[in-house]
Image 1: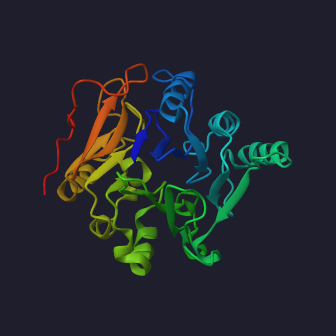
Image 2: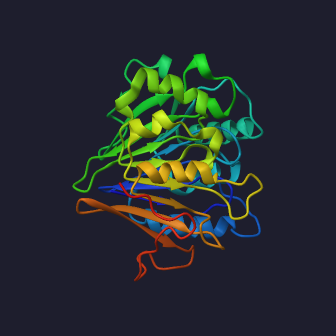
Length: 299
């Protein structure tokens, strides 16, 4: 199992491999000064090559997670078996267009050997939070959203633990843009169930997504942050990164280099390794880059 966190500017797109399967998380594919859609597609194609994309998880319906161009590209290029998204009553700038794309793909594949299933989820609407039938090499444990806290599109984000079932398996907590206050109830109800080897930092490493109790429950080895170079929001927040580094052994961000980096994270024996890659580089460069901007946290 490994995780590929792509540099997509100020947004999120990651993919996870285990066995012969891939799960894609979020779909930001912008055309901007520092990265173009075709570069992101090229890198994702190389990572996905010759494997079955079983599903697409959209943690939220804001543009930086569910960009219509990205959703369209992923659904049409890889034809996943299912698409998962929050059962969200909050409209966003892209929700209507994204749902049109999903509906079009569902209809175009409804009489084929590979139909597209929709998984619209809220933790208070599922009989079982653990999904074991969506893939051969993954399980998915749902923690959020919940109707009680869906007061914004951020707090309607999916929080789900993705666990690989191959020989190099580990757990990866996907968090979307979930904010600090929402984490209080997640901690209250699920607590130690959040424990995961790798954490995707909520809300691009923003202070508004950081929750100290949740971080202690997760107790990750590695924290991965997706944020754009010189973004207008100052993500990731320096105080949040410092707190992550006190608990995790390693913290990496896609914007820690001047031109942005993709992050390839994998198990290496009893340890974990994260390589920093450009969109036009080989998958395994000769040197392992350390976290240059903030330094490494050590237990």
